[in-house]
Structure formats: C-alpha cells, structure tokens
Amino acid sequence: MIAKRAIAVVAAAAVVLFLVPESARAADSSYRSLRSASHPDWMRALPDGTSLAKLSIPGSHETMSIHGGAWTQTQEDFGDRGATLAAQLNAGIRMIDVRARVNTGNTFTIHHGATYQNANFDDVLNRLGDFLGAHPGETVVLRLKQECTGELGSCTDATGQSSFQDIFDAYGSKHPNLFWNPSVSRSAAAAMPALGGVRGKVVLAVMNGPHGGRVASYGLAQFDGWNDGNSTYVQDNYNVPNVGAIATKRDQVRRFLDATSAGDPAKMYINFASGSSVFAQPQSVAGGALGVPGVNPFLLGYLNEGPEAHTPVVRTGVIMLDFPGGGLIDKILSLN
Image (cartoon, rainbow, N blue to C red; front, side, top):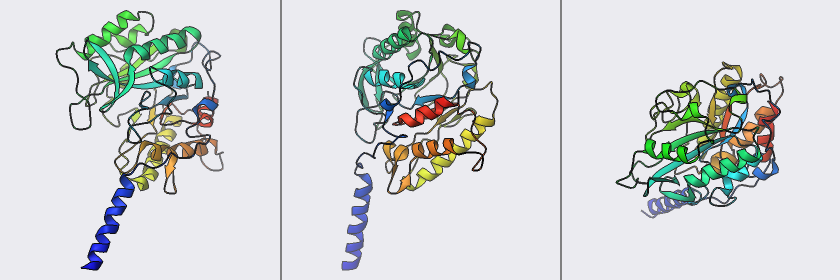
C-alpha cells in the first residue's frame, strides 16, 4: 500500500511538473531575438514583376499574442496597441496572423482565445498604414481569423452586432488606401499578385471563420480550401501533444519546406512552424525543452546545410513563426 501511494505521489508530481509553465528558453539567433534583425525595406530592391508566391517570407503566428502567460504568448513583447507588430515589421516580418473578436460598437478587439491582447483592429491597421507609408516599397500579407467560438477557453463575440464581414468592410472604408482592393472583395477572390501591383498595400490572403473555412470570397483564390489545420498549400499541424512530439512537428515543417522549394512557383505555400498543447507550450515548441530541440533552431540549421546534407532549399514560401530570432529572419530573406 505504501509503495502504491509513493508511486501515486510521484505520478502526481510529474503531472504538476508538466503543467507548470517552464522558464523562458535562452535567446539565440533563431529564437527570441527579433530585434537583432532589421529589414524595413527588403522588398524594395526586388523587381516589380516578381510574384508574391515566389518569395521567401518570414511571418508571425498569432502576431499580436503577448499576454496570457506561457500558454498563450507566442511573440516577444515589444508593447501594446500594435507596438509589437511595428517591431516585427521593422525586423522583416511580412505575413501576419490576426485573430479578432466582435466587440460592442461593431468593432474588433484582438484576442488569443479568451485573452484580450491589449490591442484593437484599429491599432493593427494604423500600425500597418504607418509602416507602409514610411516604406512604400513593401507589402504585408494578412491572415484574418474570427477568433471566438464561444467554447471553453475561447472568447464569445458581443451580441447584437453586425456580421464579421460587415464590420470588416466598415474598417476597409475607414482605411480606403490601405488594402489591395481585389483581395477584400466578398464576391470574387483575387489572383496571386506581382509585387509591383501591391507595394504600399496590405494583401488579405484569407478570412477564416471561427472553426476554420473561408469566409465568402475574401482573399486570394488559391486559398479557397484553407480550413482549420492543413490544406493544400498550408501546413498547420498545430497540435503538439507533448514535448517529445516536437520532433514530429519539426519533420512536418521540414517535409513541407522541401515540397515548397520544389513546388509550383506560381503558388504560395504557408508553413506554420508553431504548435502547442497543455503539455507543450508555444515557447517549448519554438525554442525547445527538456533536451528536445525546438522548431526554430532546427529550421535555421536546416536552411544553412549544404548539398552534402540534403537538396538545398531555394524558396521557403511563407514560414509562420513563434518567437522568431533575428538570424532565422536573416536566413529566410537571404533566399530572395
């Protein structure tokens, strides 16, 4: 009986150990060192005729998520009201992932699950407008998702408000020169643009509903099948059930990266390096934990390897990162 009780105590302690948030991983060139990169104008030198699909683009998963503790934070905290977004744009991030809740007054607030991120959609659009006004040779690709499902752990939209689409259209009317117009039409999805046609603009890649799936015809026609998780041109295996499964996530990212490099240059591939679960926090998946290397250092090492190790990557597509490091951003951009 005593032995059984001892085993039970040890097992309970192990569960508690896994549930207690880990201390932050040490920063390095792949992880938690965003500001060591500075690329506010990296698109400016590229030819106007270059398709966005051909580019190697660093992106950020849950771009605004800096609050809520280790279970919900996915990015370094450089300040509220969009200051974190501004830091990412200056570092070279050119695809962002924004999650919105319908709030009173027919407005959007920015959430990760139930946690408000001390930012509103006006903050996002104002920061984008300021950045693109100062750097008119750039473009930013946006994935917008309706965050609230009303389920446990999620948020609930305010009642009595306009539809998500109507509210978004009203924001577009307030910022008439910010979006590339073909990407924000409900009635007809847009073809993949060349860089020259979208400089100084935000390109909406997709608008997703709360359970995934595309909303109306917003965004790029290529992403008609963008659902929750994986789709034809998107790798988003976001459930990493435990620290040991980080190795599986690394392999999923690698396989999609190889497919992107060898794939159709007219198609944009989006590779989410992020993942989490109760037993594997976002920081653990990105940076590593308990001796298991994270996705970010793996990516930087893989991209740096020569032909003696594997077929070199010539195009990354878009890589959506948690806690990106400056060296990883530098390396992705070097492939353009």
